[in-house]
Length: 252
Image 1 (cartoon, rainbow, N blue to C red):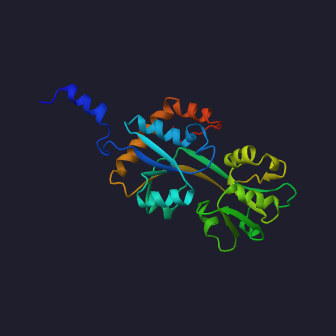
Image 2 (image 1 turned 180 degrees about the vertical axis):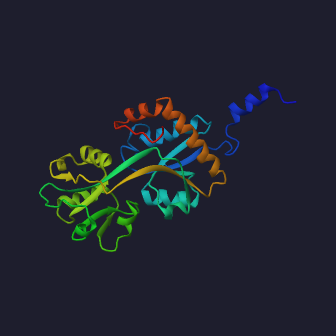
Image 3 (image 1 turned 60 degrees about the vertical axis):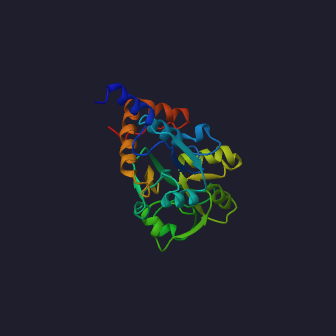
């Protein structure tokens, strides 16, 4: 008969049986303030994921990569999961999504001297819109055959194209855009402004790779621990620590 002390040793020192002793390798990208190599603890999302999964006994190693490499590597199983993912049917073929842990409000950005006011597609079709390569913004927007979209590697590239009048609009999560402008392009703060109506409000998820044979357990463990983190106040403290100050009430 196995003693209760032996069982306790197994729980405390061996860790999650599903995943062995290797840490989870999690991909993220440069998308401040949510994640980034120069941010405190690599940003809000990496620290949140690490704290959430540590409560279930997992060790976590977060790597910061360009978005396309992070997404491809997670699809292929090089990484166990990808942080800061918006849902799309295409991605759901290769990822299992966690419960959401944040909501983004994606807004169009224009030059302050621009006369653009409407976000209706019928009006937007007259303008060149800067987007970030491989991002999923909103299904109708992504799939629209009438909108003229110009793809670049980063939001910041699109922002400079905007002020140089090479495009008419760009778009990004409002908080990300404000962070990027304040920290990387403060000289542009008075040159651009947001259109008030969001294109979309997108939930942020962890996308777990279907290549991991324990993926269902990983998703369940994340969702369960995230809920506990929200209920005990740790979630709000982590947001404040990373300067994310708006309230989020997904969980009751």
